[in-house]
Amino acid sequence: MELRAAEPEDAPAVAAVWAAGWRDGHVGHVPEALVRARTERSFGVRAGERVADTTVAVVDGVVAGFVMVVAEEVEQVYVGTSFRGSGVAGVLLAEAERLVAAGGHDSAWLAVVPGNARARRFYERSGWVDAGAFDYEAAHEDGAVVVPCRRYTKRVAG
Image (cartoon, rainbow, N blue to C red):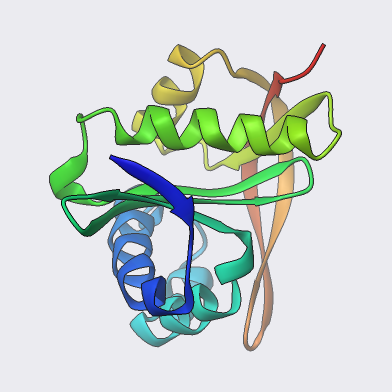
């Protein structure tokens, strides 16, 4: 597995992994207005806009997963369905933690919808702590939707 900064030509593969993973973890757990807003096109646009924030994991020439980090927030962590259980997610999350620490932050945080039990178990196994409920404002091209989430945190420096 190779970790590297995403390049513009990775955007379609990132979008495909993101769209499939987002649906798996969010449909049925977020407001329907957000499900309607998260179209194939929206993931393509967002992946292209977020290349600079993205690190990809590449296995045998295929984008197996990615992570997006901005300041102390680990915004997105997704692994392609055929790579789940292979260790890719753990490597990506560790890289996100490293990036947050390298950015001068003592702790990282991320948002998880309460119904995404698989993700919550993964974060907890990785040493992240559920710091409580909060409302996350999920932006989309027609505005934003407030999504009830759990805030997970982890000390990454010191």
